[in-house]
Amino acid sequence: MDHPTDQTRFAEVFLPHLVDAYRLARWLAGSGADAEDIVQEASLRAFKSIRSFAGGNARSWVLTIVRNTSYTWLAKNRPRAVVLTEDLDQPTRERVDLPAADEEAPTPEAALIAKMEAEEVRRAVASLPPPFREVLVLREIHDLDYRTIAEIIQAPIGTVMSRLARARKLALNAFQGSAS
Image (cartoon, rainbow, N blue to C red; front, side):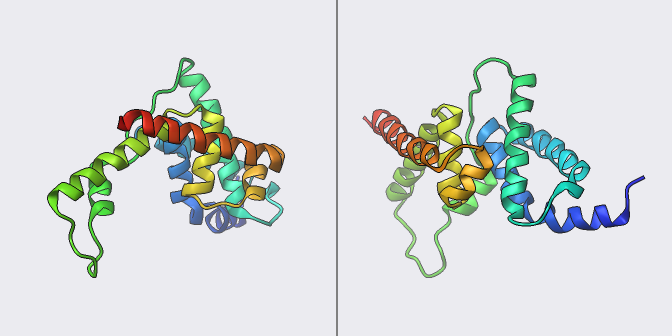
């Protein structure tokens, strides 16, 4: 039987990072439904090992579990190539695309161009091989530093830096290729 302290600790350590966990799983799996399954499995793993969390960076610990769970889940459920879909659902995209109250609303043409460019960027990132995509997402979307990314992917900082540079170059090439 689980102790109430395990539940409390899980709520304090894991739950504050649930949105980040979902975002990472969504980027790695390419599907909202798959990301939900991954996060559910990662939550179970985290709960079972909550006593082993020794403190420190809870976000890094959570994202490490989500990353590892993602790759295990993908290997089991999609042994072939992973194909990503759009990273945001329509209602979320519409909220993100709305201008701030103090901004001038873009012209319909500018809004269409911005939406097309955002989709091209999403496709460019989605086309990256998983090791490059994950460092780019962890750095640019989750805003993690190199050391934290290195802990999550269990690689030296130099590897993180080189993968990030390569990911940026590959994404830029993919973006420029789709824009022409």
